[in-house]
Image (cartoon, rainbow, N blue to C red):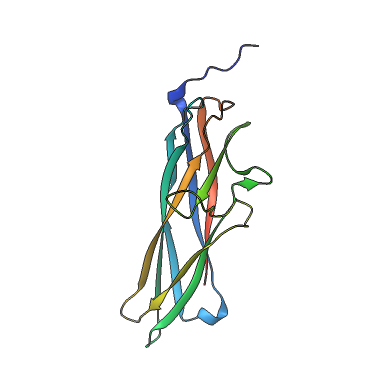
Length: 165
């Protein structure tokens, strides 16, 4: 059988970032929403010694129906897209590529490993009746270098951003 052709420009990768909310009873007068952008890596070169980096954003917007300001204490976690012991994986059929999500631009602090474990991003502020709370967070992604088993294709994954408040 002939081995698959490896065309550097035809390996594309993106992780879809979805938003969900988990409200706790103590924050009943606060309502929040998440807006997310995709973590689109673009072309990947399997034989390159340089990893492929990308970013996405998560914007938290909260409002209150009460007459007085409410303190907001929350956290964002990233779940999905991971299986032990490999962490997050982009897939194109049977072909897989490993990647990670990070809390910082230096890409030294993991933002979850896909299993629901790992670091979370704290969210805090004041939600006022006439001034909604809004804050944007950056998700830093990295596909590890030299994944020579990557085949030509469009690799995808799905990550869920969970806001707990």
